[in-house]
Image (tube, rainbow, N blue to C red; front, side, top):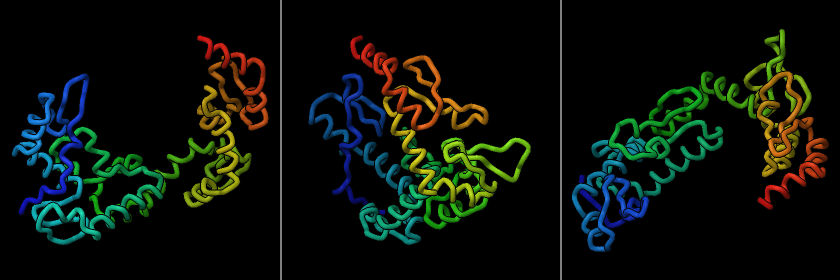
Length: 259
């Protein structure tokens, strides 16, 4: 494979950590002057690690790009419109699904020359996938993933099981029952009225040190917790709004600001 370094953003790996200039790619400290930095980024070791990471993050092995399903000549391939479009489609697919799948760039948060980086990882299925549109799309549409996704969405949306029944679910936000089917869970979570009601609560408690986690996940809990006032409040928009505007809560806010 021929080398093409003209467009490589070497400097993105040079940063200051605890007052020391460091190359996070090579994991070494550098002398803090432009000459030393230039010598390092143009050195063979840095180039080797840069190429290795780029190949892994773009699923390119040897002279073959698995993302595009085609051969390539040099690293300028990653700037080609087809390659960029394939990456964009995968990222869009993952985001639309709810970002439950980690792409290689997320997995390799700390750079390491590992073949693991050529894979994607589904966090809710705990399964590694080939980093291609075909494989990610197939997994997202599989029954296993849909079931895992449905289970993952329930606690964030106040959807709980009904005691003594495997057939129904109860939404605490909307105060309604619906059938315990994967498609029905997705349908309810995407419902406009559900989104508006949940979003009203989320926006209302934002920055108020009020938590609703226990309310959303506990079958019998009907209150939110105000950590600022050390009290519980009935978890609905009217009561939460009344509490937030009340003297006790506003007084607690003023006390915090004065500290």
